Amino acid sequence: MNNKYPVEIDGITGEVETLPPSKGKRYRCKLETMADVKAEMAKVYRESRSDIIDPVTGTKLIWMLQSVARVIEGSDFEKRLDVLEKRS
Image 1: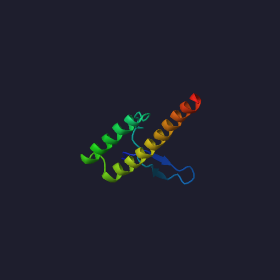
Image 2: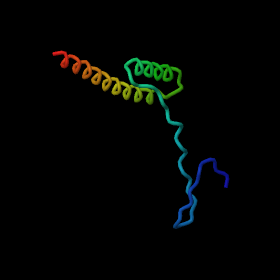
Image 3: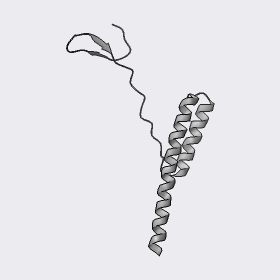
Image 4: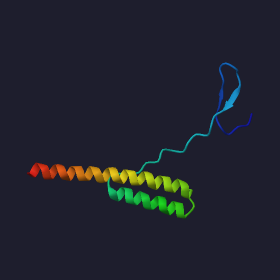
């Protein structure tokens, strides 16, 4: 059998089942500040414009990055508010 994908043998029937191809490596990037998110958004935009990634996928990634940005913004606001409340 010549198969480029991994296989699994069913323990009950003994049949060989092809497993789906494994996903790519885990992507890591720093997303701790608004500047980090901005840089990642720009990267996704450039990759989408260059047809490195599908525009539909790029849109989904940008949407997720906007959500991360809102969380960072809320967290920063909360920190600033704590500082002001402690001054009073």
